[in-house]
Length: 145
Image (cartoon, rainbow, N blue to C red; front, side, top):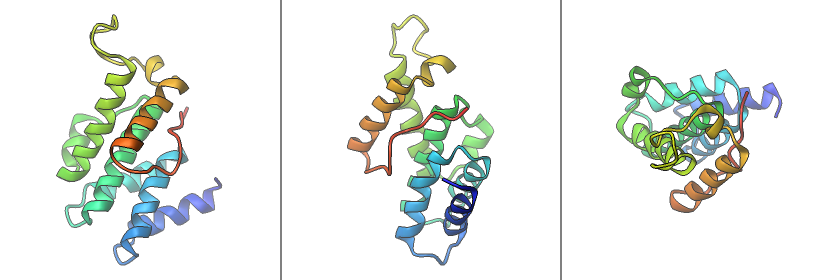
């Protein structure tokens, strides 16, 4: 996807007067952009308590997907800034990814390493699991480097 398309999704996501369904779709699509601006926009929306629940949830999940794809989770201070609904979805996705990629007893005390998290098969497994359990995603989880 080109930069113009990413910018359009970001603008829709950040527009509180835009249709809630379109904002939700933008939040779900931005995880796959591997763009720092997408992460920043998702974080902004996920940190605002006035954001509608469905958008908060999608933004939180997308931030979790980005954390898995990049191997760079939110810091504890960033995580603490998320609205509760966004934080819950972030934690669900991020912890599911860690448990799927590196279950307890896997030789690394249940903690995913960057190389574990970045494997396409592990990411696809997490994506399929979360899609079934929480809601339809716009596509498979991607790795971003």
